Image (cartoon, rainbow, N blue to C red; front, side, top):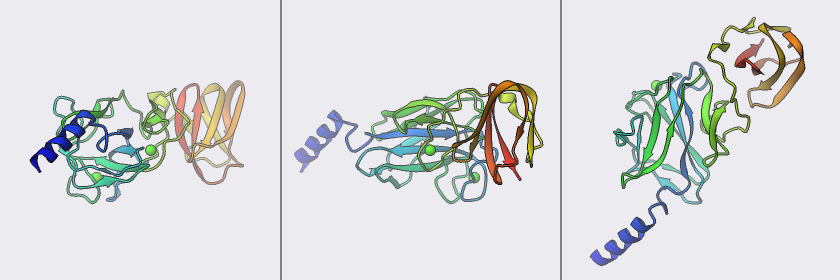
Length: 238
Ligand SMILES: [Ca+2]
Ligand SMILES: [Ca+2]
């Protein structure tokens, strides 16, 4: 039995990815969640999404998540798992007694690390993310393997292909009124814009000099994103 266990351990050690971390990645970080995605307690807290792209269920007991690379074992995962081609949502709000998965640390909107470590204390994945804008996620495209980019938050499901690379921290209050009715005005004129719906489907776009307002009367009620050369901002059509 001992020899068998030794052999098994050797086998696993020689190929530590198999059955433990292959296909398991940090997929999305929302570190400035003003009012995008609520946790089971209705709170807009920081959140991390993992993805399992492998064909096996990954059991998380023995893994750790941390916001500090020199203290990778900060938060041990409880006995939970991720099914193949599925996502796991972990709220980083230092509220470990709330329903759902909650770490004992929060994330900084001004940028820090998220480190996923396995039971051999090997780093499975790590992202050192830059300063974040409110309600915008930082995630991989495509899921699990792609480069990191700013994107529309998709916590618990697949990341969307539209990268929001041109972000401006000062986009707030550059459009008004918000919520809008028939027109949305832009304080600083732009030369082109795109309007995306909540699923990041392109709805409307225009390219001409000095655009100062957008006709929104044909939009149905809901949440939209306006993307211009100045950045991206959410608006609501009433
Ligand atoms: Ca919470
Ligand atoms: Ca996602």
